[in-house]
Length: 293
Ligand code: UTP
Image 1 (cartoon, helix red, strand yellow):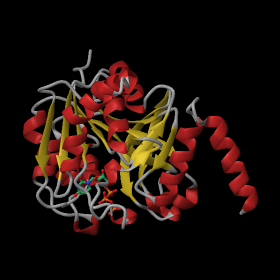
Image 2: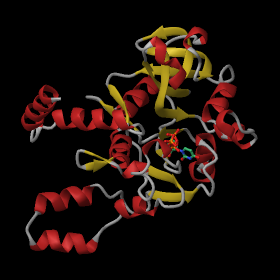
Image 3: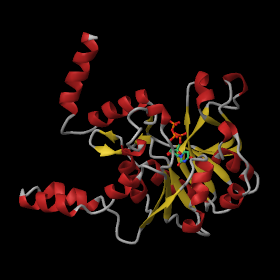
Image 4: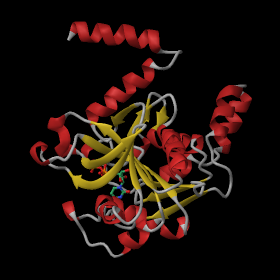
């Protein structure tokens, strides 16, 4: 039986340059898809997967995220006064329980690997999940839950979410080199960062969900800067390969890259089309806009 994954790290220290000017003063993770910020989807996904403790690696200009996961007494009293009870209950339910949330500053955005390393003392010596909120996944069973279930079956180990991409798009992703495959679970033999299609070992891309054993922290601690002069998570993951089991799960669901403008627009339409209260209106206006264009 594998050790339970109880803790999740949410790296939210990035600058979000692909989404400027929206992200100049507002964190990318607070961009709403329909009516909910990306980071709230990420926290809900973690909760659904059994996560009990939530660690945010933040940076300058990100305090609004702390406010979002806190009680808002003025707002709550207005909602009570106006008898908006369902909305009130929804807001209160979105606040994690006292003592289960912590924020740690990544003083400089030195890369995703560095952001994860910043959570080392909070996570301690146990397996943990990492969720990148800008990779939003629409799925019947939340992606992290699928990963936790698959990892339990394997008795533990490191795992990441993988998805097939168009062969001509490999240079946009971390790509894995697959070994054996069973039930959508692929043994990873190598990881290559953004390879040209001609050099790519497969078209299986790494998506922003990971379950990692704590050994990763030692590797990140001593790691020098890699591509883009940043401390890359992929480099530390590559170092783990061969020393500890490492799987990619081809999850069921659709991923939207909400750090990118087109991906973000797609996500808004797709999530709205899944909402019973708005799907008819959305279908009508999307069809009309497309016809008029
Ligand atoms: P991205 O590669 O999307 O970088 O980071 P970014 O800075 O957020 O956005 P762009 O590329 O400039 O538009 C992937 C994830 O890693 C986090 C980001 O917040 C995002 O969730 N990250 C990245 C950090 O927490 N710290 C960093 O130093 C870099």
